[in-house]
Every structure is written in C-alpha cells, then in structure tokens.
Length: 361
Ligand code: FES
Ligand SMILES: [Fe+2]
Image (cartoon, rainbow, N blue to C red; front, side):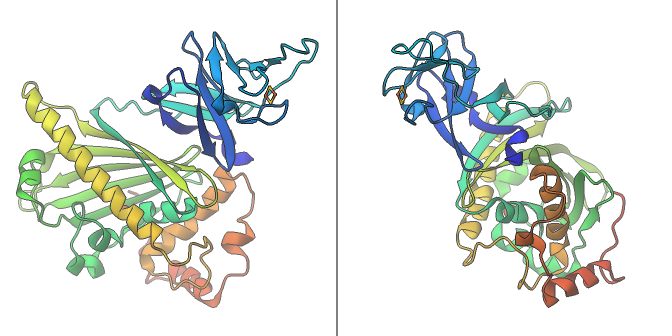
C-alpha cells in the first residue's frame, strides 16, 4: 500500500509506555511497543504463528511476547519460538521515529524523510489530536477550502456578510504542493481573546495555507494587520495538521500549534495564552468534525456535486493526493472517471476568465 510509504505521526510519545498499543493506519492493524531500552517497535498486529493480536501481549527486555503461545519478536520483526527454536518466524515490521513529541511510522523499505517542523521564529504552544468519522478526502476538503469559515467556525476569519467579496488566491505552479492565500476582514472576537492576542475585529486576517502530500499535511501561517495603519500585529500563529487515514471511513488529525516567540517576562500570561489557544483550536476543529460527521453522503468523488468557485482547490489537491500520496499516476475512477456535466462545467469555470487567476503568493 503506497500510503504507508510516507511518514505518519500516529501517537503521542508519552502515551507509549510498557504496555503495547494497537493502532489502525490505512486499514492495517499495527502494534506499537517500547522495549526496555526505550526503542519503539512497530509490527503488524498479527502473530505469524496463529494470528493472535500481538497488541495484547507484553514486552520482555527488547522483545514483544505473543500472549497465545509465547513466541517473541524484536523491533526488526525477527521472531523466536520457544517450542520450536529452529523456526525463524518473522512479523511484518514498520519503521518508526520519535520526534516533535510524536511517534512516527512508515513502511520499512520506503525512502522518505521526516518533515522539518522546527520553526525558529515560533515556539510550540500546544498539540491536539482528533478522530473524525469521515474519509480522508472529505476531511482534507474542509481543511482546504475557506467558504465554510463564517458558518462553521466561531473565531477565525471573516463574517457571513463578506463571503461574496472574498477572493481565494491559489498557487498551483508547484506540482508537489498547493498554496492558498486568504486575506479577509477578521470578524469580531470575544474581548478576552482580542486582549490576549493583541488583535481586533476588523483587522486584516492573513492565512497562508500550504498543502503537502508526502507526508500528507497542511501548514497555516496566520497573522493580522491593523486595518487603519497597515501595521502588522505582533502575534502570529502557525498550525500544522497531519491527516492519517485510519481506514476508508475514519481519519485521524494530529496537529501542532505554534505562537510567535514570546517577549521576555510575563510567564503566567504566556501560559494562559497557550491554554486559551488550545481551547479555541480544539473548539474550531470540533466544529469541522461535527460538519463532516453529519454529511449525509460520504462518497468521496466530486461528481454530481454542484461545486462553487471556492471548490477549485478540491479538484487540484485530489490530483496530487492520487499521484503523490497514493502513488497512482492517474486520478482513480473514484475521484475522476467521466466528469459529470456539473464537474465539466466547473472545470470550464475554473479555466474561464471569471475564475480568480492563479497568482504568486
Ligand atoms: S499465535 Fe502467537 S505464539 Fe502462537
Ligand atoms: Fe474548518
């Protein structure tokens, strides 16, 4: 399965202690375990002997012990049968890494590097994890388009009355990423939030989204500009969202959120700021989750949909998702067989002069 060739952050490091943990990723059940020396192992959650779940076993020294007949496996998948020592059982093994407070996982033989998430101008404020009962494509749809912001979200971005004036600026020039810049008036915010982050309703809200496909993640760089003076507000926010397909019906979102480097002093204020930010972001992602889980028909293809001008990014990102993340040269029939009349019309709209031009961001 090509998806597993890419790195996925699957679990907080602190969550894996002596007890093995079973997870699901891309429809595969995998056991994560930590050996006595602290190394993290990941094996297919099936004992090669008689298919017992290894995640119900335990760790002894550097090996994971199967709870059925006591066969044991190292992080490299090489096993040992106490009853038949000449047998050389071998469990399917995955490569792991521990970085940025997460355990990362990918197929053993793929050659890709971990993303660089060290941002020198920022400090980490919080990390979040959400599980959404919706397929990967639908989750990425909502994280890619901005039309839903005024109706589905509470804090960030513009109000409902401004949706007709908003022009998303797409950049599809790089075949490996997609960029989207939104500049919108910031809606009014609760007083405490304005005070804490030094922004005001009516400021110009800038959101630079970059979509990556190996691994599958988005970065959002957010800042505000004072409307009258054009001066940038001091506080900046950087959010990174990773999307892991658990199976075809469920997606895991792992996210890290950074704030611009704090001024010296005021540690209590900065701690409070982190807590408020965590609450706000968790609330906003839960709003997306609520929408996604209430979509009446969770088919992922775009046919028969009446797509609008904000939805162009959906068509473009799916091409990259198929080609880079899924490793399929052409877009699969599920997402793009014979385009329906509506989809064809959208393609025409997308290439017509009425559609906002791609431009450098
Ligand atoms: S099934 Fe695992 S040791 Fe027999
Ligand atoms: Fe959203």
